[in-house]
Length: 79
Image: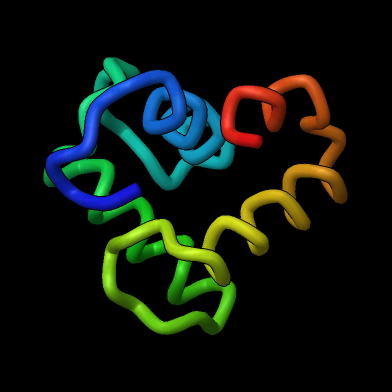
């Protein structure tokens, strides 16, 4: 997912990032500026390449953290 994308997958990421206090915007399924900023914060904290896009490595890190924190149900929206 990347800026400009829309849909249930983006909404799933927004929900998780909001739960983890990285995303402060409305959970609307639109990959806008606030979603991009939240992804960048997540990437920085996870020591990933900071580009604001949810590519393979960022997606894997979200899943790993989600499983570790017990967010199995919420991860279904992005998998």
